[in-house]
Every structure is written in structure tokens, then in C-alpha cells.
Amino acid sequence: MLYAILLTSAVLIVGVSLINIITRQLILTSFNRNSQIAYYNSRSMTECLDFYVTKNSYFLQIDNETGAPTGVKDSEEIQCGFLSDNITLNSSLVGGDIYIFEGKTNFADSGSSYFKVYYNLDNLYINSNYDGCGDEVISDSFQESCAKVIRTSGSNFALDNSNPRKVERISLIAR
Amino acid sequence: MVESLVAITILLIAVVGPLSLLATALRDSVYLRNEITANYLAQEGLEVVTFFNATESSLSTGLFCVDGTKEGVDESLIQENDPADCVVKLSPSNYYGNEGENTIFQRYVIIEEISNDMVGDEEGQELKITSTVAWQNSGLLPDRDITYTTYLYAE
Image (tube, rainbow over all chains, first blue to last red; front, top):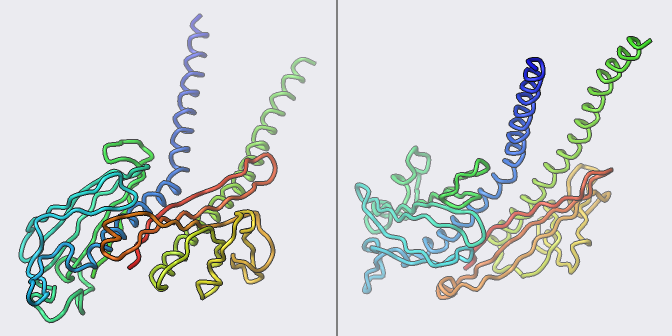
């Protein structure tokens, strides 16, 4: 009886260990594909935000007489084809002349993203004679040296999903 | 006699076990090589379209075979009706494209225009790009495909 219990326990331990290893292997082998899906979700969000950001008047307040930007709007709504609903981005001042629009959203099919759009008014041509990163693009802090920075994180699962196969990738555009 | 049989059986298990493991590992490494190649081919499909979306005034919609070795949009994105016509070839200089010997891979991208009122109001266009690579594994391994999707915007 004792030998039977010992043998069964040993077989059970080996079996459970094997299942554990196989599960981990399956998760690991799916990382490559899931990572790429997360990356392209991030890119999709970046491309969508960039479309609106490159339209100077979209997130900025514009002087009707001169046509020059005078500041950022309090909030603005955007529409991207991979989202089921429009999303509203609210602005806040994060220091100096840097404003940030941020948000997070689930995609219509699968995946999600959270994102930040930085506007540094100091580097927009409102307050200086150049619009963009100028010569200072090599910097630890893009948002301080550029006029507009889009930083997007994309994932292959929804925001609140804690699946072990979940991967996050970041993409960034600095202008 | 019985002892000899038991000993031979144990020896056989000890030899056949690792041998079958080696055979499986070899088959899996071929499978993995195909998967990695397909992965990069699918990525290249999306990157080629992304490049031409940034450099060309507008892209046509539909199903296209992709050749990343060419320079012009008409040579790189060849419109077809059937994905089966998009067999990837391997050139003598080891580049995947439309020239050389047939490989086991088929690659095609689908460019669709997405209706987006806000983008339209800003005189823009939203495109959904799907890049698919399908391939046939040898032996008993199943056929596979890999698909990546991204969205692009054009002014």
C-alpha cells in the first residue's frame, strides 16, 4: 500500500511538472506573434493620432486673425477605424509649456492601447522661430526638445485582461 | 531468458526514446524556421505598404502580391484576384520576391478603405492593411498562415 502511494505520488508530480512546462512552452512560443500584433496595434493608434496631430488646428486653439496657434484645446474628439466608438482626449498642463492629451481604449476586434500626445508650446512656432524638434532631437526627453510627441502603447488583449499571453509594445513619433 | 528480455526491452526504450525525441526536434526546427520566415514576410508586406502610403499620393485598394526588392509602387504591389497567384519566390541572391524559384509561401496584402467621417472631414483617407502569409509544411505537419493588420492614414 505504501509503495503504491509513493509510486502514484511520484507519477503525479512528474505529470503535473510536465503540464506546467508544456503550458509555459506554449506561452513562450506565442510571444513572437503576439508581440507583432501588439506592435501593429500600437502603430495603428500612433498613425491615427498622428493624422490628427499633423492637422495643426485639430488640438490647438487658433487665432482667427493670424491663423497662428495660441494654445491647446481643453478637449477634442477623434475617430479611428479600429475603435467601436469615438474617443475624447482631454488636455492638462504637465509643467512649463508642455500640455498632454492622454487616454486609453479597447479596440473593436481585439487589443487595446493607451497613449499620450505631448505639445510643447515653447517649441511650436507660437513662441519660437521653429516648429518641431530642430537640432535638439537627440535628447533624453523628446517632449522637452520637440513640439509634438506621440507615445503609444499597444497590446494584443483588452486593457483589463491579465492573460499571461498579453504583450505590450510602444511606438513613438517626435515632431 | 526473462532477465535478458527485460534488459533488451529497457535498452530499446533507452535508445528509441532519445532517437524519437531527436527526430521530433528536427521536424520542429524546420517548422519553426518556416514560421519565422513567414513572420518576417508578413511584416515586410505591411512595411512596404506603409512606405508607399507615405511616399505616393494615393494607394489603390484590393488584393496585391508584394515584392519588397523592387523600387516603384507598381512593381512592388502587383494587383491580383487570387491569393494563390502570390507565390513567393527566392532569387539566386537569396531575396524573397517575384523572381527565382518558387517557395512554399504565398504572400498577399489587402488594402481596404475605411469609412471615417472625421478623417474625411479633414480631407484624409483611412486604410486598413492586412498582410497574410500562408505556407504548406512538409510531411504530417499542418498548413499554416499568419496575418497582421494595421491602419494607415493618408492626406
